[in-house]
Length: 470
View (cartoon, rainbow, N blue to C red):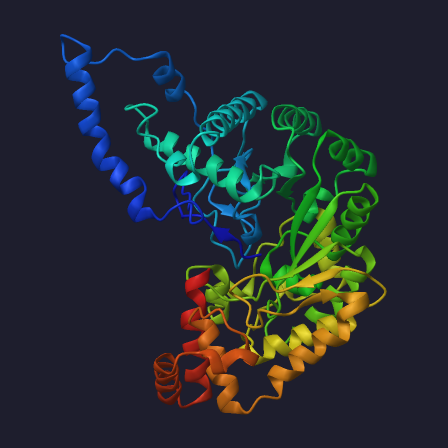
């Protein structure tokens, strides 16, 4: 499951596009604050140091931890880090948490973070009574001794207030549901007490972790305040899961998904077309659809599979015998028994050939066509996906979605390539809107297409741009 990194290897990184751009925000603040501080020091103390006010001392203590990763649609949500990194951290396709040690933060640490959020919320709401959002985003008039971390925490809360109305929080990092149930529930209740405006409290949960929880556990967690779960299934095919070294099985996916639904928790499942390569593409589509049909999650979110340099999948895709010959089965003994029972590829050399861009689209069509008897909302909500307007309820819009895919597949080769490259070069455009593209931009696109004059070179050109998103 590809997620949206805020900024790799930084504890904080907040973008406040709706409130003001960077050039007019923190950059000027950082230049002016030292001058103001020096002026106040000269006036406030014979020794040249201004005495710290009560507000200064409070501000110094108000920070909260924010991780690197969130789902794209949580861009305006409040982010709180309740666990650090990933407890599994062995998926062959993922490098997001490599090099980081997993840790579950204590309930006391979590409560302190929530208190800091409540402090900034109250401070900003009070300031918004008499100032506009652009003025409020500046902290220089609050205290001259504000640290970088405090500025970033302040900016996140302002973004949350202005753009989310204080309704949503996402609990990081990769598998918050691994926390002990009593500690998770205690933290959730405190979160709800201090931030009563919340409507959605969401987090990630791995299928193997979730499958260990009972229906009663999920009901207790829901009652404590968790309303939404995200799970990166990636695939519902056991052979693909073993290839990815996902550490979970389709049986675990179905088991946990059905309990989550019955407990009344909104469920988001992620599917990666192309993750099985050419050989397993059809099975990946059909068996993942079968899992989704048996769960009926609220959302199915598409995340196109891309082989990332530096990952084990990169070595496997490039024919590294050592990488492809044997990969760790992961998970429990039951997982390994499942692999053996299915006669999977786990104990023999792996041959992985990455699907082309168009082949991944065809796999998505096979997948959607196999969905039935459910009201899941399918959505392509990431720049990594080729078709941006693919969305709809399975029970109402299935034909509309397959027709939309067929419209792309039926394009003449040159028009298909122009759209592919435009999307892979980060143009926010659909294939039905290409006439709106500036001619100067289209000339650049046609020039790149002309240079990629053989199929292998063309696919590698697309992947070159696509890898910039992961």
